Length: 287
Image (cartoon, rainbow, N blue to C red):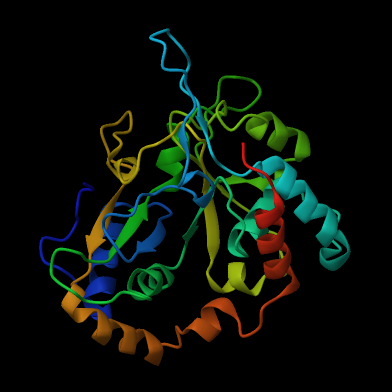
């Protein structure tokens, strides 16, 4: 279970914003947000949600491995190749195409967050149906710089940790391939890695949702425990906010007044990117 910042469940947008301000005052760093409509959902990328152990049951000592997920590298490169003429931006690398694929429905090793807390609140309550008080929406707050300070990623001189959100605009395909050539052997086995792009990816969804990402690997099976992870200074990676299930309809109406609706969040039309991402995902074999 995550550590909940609020002792009483949030019942309105006003209360939610008050808690955000209160937490931010004591944590004067960049903060990211992600909403789940159930506290039981894990902080796991879509690519790995159906994975199973890939180990022989013979009593021998073996490295932990997982299988039963799409061959992401094959799917991503096909997605990139088919969209180059549509995107028409030679600066983009495989990290950028991962972000686009994630937002348009392809399973990826990236988990999307938002720099806008109201976007996270929207996703927490969207689609939620009240049945009882035992299931409730949550919004996770993450300190991405603290995450990266504790990651296994370093600058090439080997002496400096990455103490900021890493901008993939400075990366290239070789770095991506070094990280993700084997989903069971990446630099993200200890803890995920926070990344972003400052480019205009010409994606209404990423722009409207203020999209940023954490990168994961198959063996990192922790769920909400990510938020509870202790940094070297004893501080947590973040906290969670409980939303009152019986107040969800009120919060939905308040968000609608603030123009947070399916049309503004997703856009009104199914795009070429969405069609390609979903069709490639269906055709790509699993590992």
